[in-house]
Length: 183
Image (cartoon, rainbow, N blue to C red):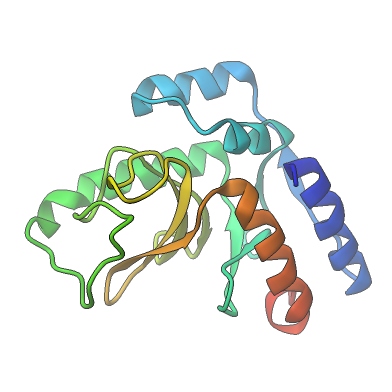
C-alpha cells in the first residue's frame, strides 16, 4: 500500500465518523534535501513520498496508530520531525548509561538516541513517537518502525517498515474509531 492509497482509506474512515482528515500541503524537494543534509543520511523513500503528499496533520488528528494500542499518532511535519530529531540528540547526553526498564528488542540498537532514528509521528511528541529506524542493529532491518515511550523510557519494535505500518494502522483505527478519531 502506498501513502496516497492509505490517505484515501483513512479519509473514508474519517468521513464514516462525520469528520474530515486535514493534512498540510506536501513539502518541496528542496526541503527534503535540506533535511537529508542535516541528518547525514537519505530518508527512506516511502517516508519522503509521504511528506511530498502531506506535510503533517492537525495537532490532535490521528494519522497513524500503533497495533495493539489505543493511542492515535499525528503525522509530524518535516519541520516538526527535524525538531524532535534534534531534541533527542540534544537530550541524549543526559541519558548516557541509561538502561531500558526491560530487555530491548534485539532489532534495535542500544542507547537513548541513534543518528538514524527519525521521528515522523507523535502523540504529544516527544512523549510518544513513532520513529523510522535508518540505523537498526545487525538483527534489524533498515526502515523498520520503532516506538519511543516516555516515563519509563522505552524503545520497542513496531513493524518491519513504513509500508507494513500503513495497513496495520488502518486496521487499528477501523477497529477503534471511537478511541482514535475523536476530536
